[in-house]
Structure formats: C-alpha cells, structure tokens
Amino acid sequence: MKIAKSPATATANHERDRRARAAIAAALFCAFALYIAWHASHESQTRPIDELPMSTARGDDTSIPNADVDKSDLIKRGAYLTRVGDCAACHTADPGRPFAGGRSISTPFGKIYTPNITPDPDTGIGQWSDTDFVRALHEGIGKAGERLYPAFPYVEFTRMTEQDMLAIRAYLNTLAPVHYRPPANELRFPFNQRWLMIVWNLFNFNEGRFVPDPKQSPQYNRGAYLVEGLAHCEACHTPRNFMQGLKTTERFSGATQAGWQAYNITPDRTSGIGNWSDDALIAYLSTGIAAGHASAAGPMADVVQHSTQYLKYEDLRSIVAYLRALPPVSGGVTRPRDAWGMPAADDITSLRGTAVTTVSGLQLFAVNCASCHRWTGEGVGGNVLGALPSLIHNSVVGAPSPDNLAMVILHGVRRQTKDSDMLMPAFADELNNEQVAAISNYVTKRFGNPQATLTADQVAALRAQPQ
Ligand code: HEC
Ligand code: HEC
Ligand code: HEC
Image (cartoon, rainbow, N blue to C red; front, top):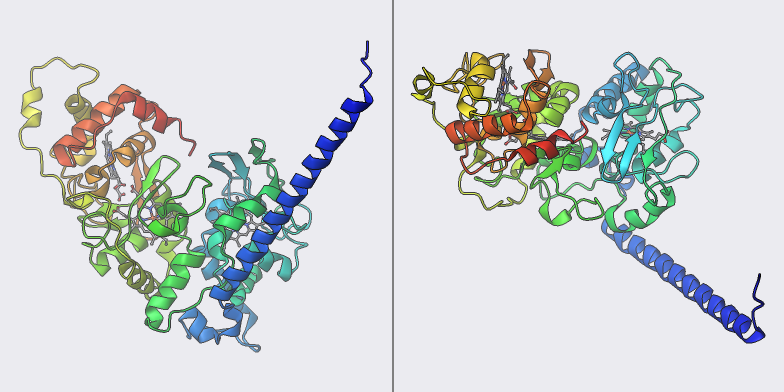
C-alpha cells in the first residue's frame, strides 16, 4: 500500500531538491571558473612554440622541413620520430599486426587497450584529419571530442612541435592498413567515464609546446625537447601522485612501473646516475649495456629495443647533456647502486657433501644461475656487449630495492638490438616464491646490497603484476 505524502512533506522535499540543485549548479560553476583560471594562468607561462622560429624551438636546425622539401624526406623523418616516441611498443600487440593496437596497458584503475593507429578507415585512423591527429597528441582529445586516458603519454607529447607530429602522421599514412578492432577497455566505474579526465587534466596536465631555455645550449634544449616530450622518459622515471599525475617536484627521481623500479636518473652521485660517464649513458641507451653499471631489463629493455637504439648519436648526446643538467634528487642512500659487491670466493666448496634443500639460496643459485653467471657471480666474458653479465657492479643487484632482481628472475631478460640478442630464461614456472626470495637474498647478500632483502609474500605480489 502506498502512503500518501502530506502537502507539508512534499513542500519540504521540493525545497530540499531545489537547494540541492542550486548547490550542484554553484559547484559546477566554481569548477568551471577554476578551470578557466587554471588555463589562463598556465597559458601565460607557456608561450606556444608555433610562434618561435623552428630552429630555436627544436634546438636542432639540421633537418627542418620547408615547403619544397621532398616528401620522402618527411616520411623518413617521421619514421625516425616514430621510433623516438616508441609508438610501436604500445600500439603493437601482435608483431604480425604492427601499429594495429590491442596491447593491454594495466593501470591502477583497470586495463586499457591501445587503439589501432594504422590508416585503416574503419578500425584505424584512416579517416582522421591532420588536425584530429595533432589534437589527440597535443590535447589528449580523440576524434569524436572524447577525452583520452593519460596511459597515452599526451602529457609529454604536448611538448612536441606540430611539424614533428605531421612528419609522424606522414609516416603512419604509409603503413599497410590493418583491419582490426582492439578489445574494449576494462576500467572500473567511475574511471570508465572519460569526461572525468577533464578534472584530471585540470590538476595534472599542462598543455603547451616546448619552450627552449635561451640560457642553455642548443644541445641541452634538443635533449630537453626529446626527454620531456617525444621520448616521454618521465612516464616511467618520475613518481606519481595519488591521481596518477606526475609529481613535478621530484622529476626523474624514480618510480614503479608494472612491478619494475624505473630508477632515479637525476645526476645525484649516489642515488642517481651522477657517477656514470657520458659514454656509459650513451652505451646504455644504444645497446642496453653500460659496462660496470647496468644492463636494461623489463620495460627499459623494450625502450632500448624499440626506441633508443635507433637514435642518432647527436640526439643521444643531447639527451645525456639534458639529464646531466637536471636538479639532483637524493634518495637517501649512501652508496651508488652500481658500486656494490665482490666475487664470491669460497661458497661453492661449502656446498660439497651437503644435502640439497629446496630453499637454500646458495644451492638454488648454483643450480639455476651459476651456469651463466658463474658461481663467483663474475659472469663470462666481462660486462660487455654479448657477454653473460657479471652480477657485481650491476645496478639491479646493488639497488636498495630488490624488486627488479626478483622481476629479472621471474621474467628473464629479452632484448634484441642491432648488435646482439640478449636472452636470460624466465624462472617464473620453475621456482616458487620462497625459492625466488631465497635466490634474491643470496644474490644481494653475496654480490650486491645486503640490505635489499625480500620475503616470499613480496615475491608473490611482484609475480601478480601484469606485464
Ligand atoms: C605508453 C604507451 C603509448 C605510447 C608510447 C603511445 N601511445 Fe598512442 N595511445 C596509447 C593509449 C593507451 C591510447 C588510448 C587512450 C584512450 O583510450 O583514451 C592511445 C591513443 C592514441 C591515439 C588516439 C587513437 C584513437 O583511436 O582514439 C593516437 C592517434 C595515438 N595514440 C598515437 C600515438 C603516436 C603517434 C605515438 C608515438 C608518437 C603514440 N601514440 C605512443 C598508448 C600509447
Ligand atoms: C616504459 C618505462 C620506461 C621508459 C619510457 C624509460 N625508462 Fe629508463 N628504465 C625503466 C626501468 C624499469 C629501468 C630499470 C631497468 C632494469 O632494471 O634493468 C630503467 C633504467 C634506466 C637507466 C639505468 C639506471 C640504472 O641505474 O640502472 C637509465 C639511464 C634510463 N632508464 C634512462 C632512460 C631514458 C633517458 C629514457 C627516455 C629516453 C627512459 N629511461 C625511458 C623504465 C623506463
Ligand atoms: C642461460 C644463461 C642465464 C641463466 C641461467 C641466468 N642468467 Fe641472468 N642473465 C643472463 C643474460 C644473457 C642476461 C642479460 C645481459 C644483458 O642484459 O645484457 C642476464 C641478466 C641478469 C641480471 C641483470 C639484469 C639487469 O637488469 O641488469 C641479473 C641480476 C641476473 N641475470 C640474475 C640471474 C639469476 C639470479 C639467475 C638464476 C635464477 C640467472 N640470472 C640465470 C643469462 C642467464
């Protein structure tokens, strides 16, 4: 039975609704005003690059296109820039369908599948105008005006010149169209509401082209243009706030990416890469190995394989010049990651005649790792390209966090470059969490940073990270 409302209650309800509507309208108005104010303040800081002469803007005046430039040069430049931006890495799920998307990107809010960016008219971006394309990369807005998610690094790409974007577009237009529709995103409510990105952008997105610093060298400016923009190094190396926006106060000081630590790459001498030579940094970015410092595994192996190995020497030098000039950020450690360890001398003799147990780190190391890294940890062939690497003076083994070591044991290393094809097998199926923890603890104690210890539960959490 329905109970009729008294006229007094109806009026009170009506009044409450009216007040609620007024409050919502006022809140929306405030948000809008805040949005306008925010934009106004940001616009005054960043002068659009399109007003600047291109040579100044790009910090590189060797390959500027002009009206009568040969189209094939434009496409070649576009192909190069597409590598710098590492577009293929995210937009390729199946190597047989390059740039057709479908690769899943895990975020704390669910899974996003990358779109098809081949020129297919139905499933790709064949029907996009150049303006649509530039708007997506500069503003994070899709063809239908929808907000794009920042798993697409438009927060960095916005720094890029329009000319460079159009070169990329010219190259993408030459790709074979692939008719493939990637799966729909699997995002939880409310993150599946694209319009919410308006609020996110308000706090975390600073739209605007790169503005060169006239006090710095052209080399520095070119490096800044690449690192802050197209090469989007910050997407992994800068820590994020609770909204997953970049923390602008601790730029390049290290962050976690799918369970991997993307280390501090500021010039701090103990927490960053201040003790690396320029040549070591260039070797790392172009081959994945810097002797006596580090080799690239996990997401960084992909960056080297798909992007930085193809960079011109001058561009690598510029990137290094820029990284060197960043404000150093101290992580509070006392010794650089790559300055730990000495060869194990006598461990192996202590094994003779002892019963094999399942969780002795030393025994597990001898059985699973020593064939390649030697029981002394020194590897085979020195810490150079193509060698089986030494675990001593290796940033993963000396890092204050053992996470990357556990990830390397679980997932192995795969890095293909022009010069070599590095392969370390994955042990995720062979070793349980307790065994991975035991090996990791043995390796850090014996060859690296003994404070970096790991429990089986921590390994379980790392194992659960989608790759
Ligand atoms: C770190 C991964 C990543 C990289 C690198 C990346 N993208 Fe994307 N891109 C994405 C994701 C994820 C989306 C989808 C965002 C969404 O659905 O809101 C996307 C969306 C796009 C879109 C919009 C397509 C559509 O149908 O809405 C374009 C265009 C695009 N990317 C081009 C590029 C280009 C060009 C590059 C290289 C310069 C690039 N992307 C590099 C992850 C990436
Ligand atoms: C997709 C995420 C990602 C991107 C993008 C990325 N990095 Fe990395 N980077 C990592 C991870 C993860 C590591 C640790 C690799 C390892 O443990 O072997 C790393 C390691 C490094 C190291 C070695 C640090 C050390 O002490 O071992 C350098 C140098 C570096 N990155 C520079 C760069 C530069 C320069 C860029 C931009 C051109 C870049 N990275 C872009 C994830 C990334
Ligand atoms: C079949 C040979 C082989 C075996 C077995 C092997 N590794 Fe490796 N390991 C490699 C190769 C190759 C690399 C990659 C070298 C490079 O990146 O240039 C590597 C790299 C590493 C790195 C450096 C990763 C980085 O990002 O710097 C560590 C740490 C490591 N291995 C530990 C282990 C441990 C622990 C085991 C045993 C569970 C093991 N490896 C078993 C061949 C092997």
